[in-house]
Length: 632
View (tube, helix red, strand yellow):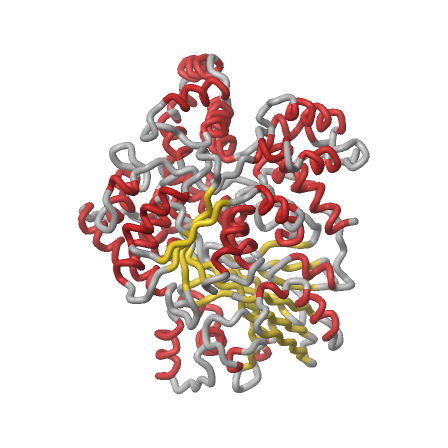
């Protein structure tokens, strides 16, 4: 896990390279390197977090033996040893035990098609002198970030946007048209960023930049939709369970290949429990597990995770998050996340990363399980009520019933239910469900159920209109059933642009490498062809994962409600963070060309009056703090 930077220049500019590296030095504190290619004018820089081959032989930027290829690389290719064996059979000689050198010679031998051999998470840039081009590549799921800036004159690239600020040609012009999407969803969808001419290279894509014509082309080399479109498997449930267990076990085992200590984020949910179980039962090294707890039992999962860790016999660490922990980190969010980012679960993720870093250098996370195995509750609710969109009568009946119950009433009812039936985060889920039912189409209902703030509220809040529909994709998979459509869209957008950005920045902020075994591309390629009746069976999400997990853990231990990484946001914004809210949402601080000032003041008044509007307040706060950090 590392950080890379670079740009096309007309002359050697080592000082700028070093400045660009220094601002993201936490991504790779173990080593740093720069390189300038006189013929092409390419400047390369790299910060290294040593995980594989800790020696100086893994130093980057790395040159091929013939000198025609140069690489900077962030991530891990887990199956590099088998690829290396192929290359050695072709008489390639290696000086290191690193996967970086394997990528470099794979490209030399097979060109860009070599990317299809790689199992892992990766963002790399290769200077191909032989063909006068620069190649930027991002992994299939988007675990590792890669940004580029292209204004027609300057071409820059980096693991993080903040490095661009250190280049004299970078223009900090806001891309205001994406703000409505941030204030609705809490993140900015790829390929867009908060700045004009600045882009995220989308997951499963590569960019080829011609060094003679100075023209670029972007190519999609992998798309999860293509696997959903394939013929479904005609296999028994038992066959699928056996093949899936073998695939999952291999994905987890591959991510244990490293030369440093490894741990697991254990929340107590099905996904993290599965990862920990496989390692505890099949691996001979001691397994370290980590979890975060809260004194408020509505958000606390620590006891549940502890019981699972005890059963598995892991070396378990739990940390109860204090308000002071959160306050110390809030000011750092705009720095680490580069552009406005509203997912408040970044805070506990950063704290848990900090705790884990005391013991390990690599952490296994379990993101991707909901999108691959059909786990989000919104999938089940929307699928169940999808027929109302074809019947105005049904829709009106349901809308009338929903309007009888407020979010507060639903929460009170939920609190009276036994723990086995109780829903977590019920007010937010109910609010999203009501918005979804009031939608005109199934696709719109999914977007409303996926947003944190309803579109009408965003329109009232801002003076800016969205440029176009940045979200979408249902038309590309209109032959699929609704459940598969929702999973495919979430895999490509929400997971890549929210979840994985959150985890990458949180882990990297403390120089911790995060690995995602459930995002091994072979898993989603397989599951995309499994019948939805097996992924959502007996009204149970994650049916297949559960059946495998029950082989390792008793049902009574794992079948419990899970709340996820939530924080008491409303309470904190009204207490410890109130001064920040009052300051950043004041008339004096708000830009009248962006915000409807009166609407923001009314929102603030209603929030402090007791209405549950913390998410909207938090999004504005994050934007305002980001703007102060990077534009003023």
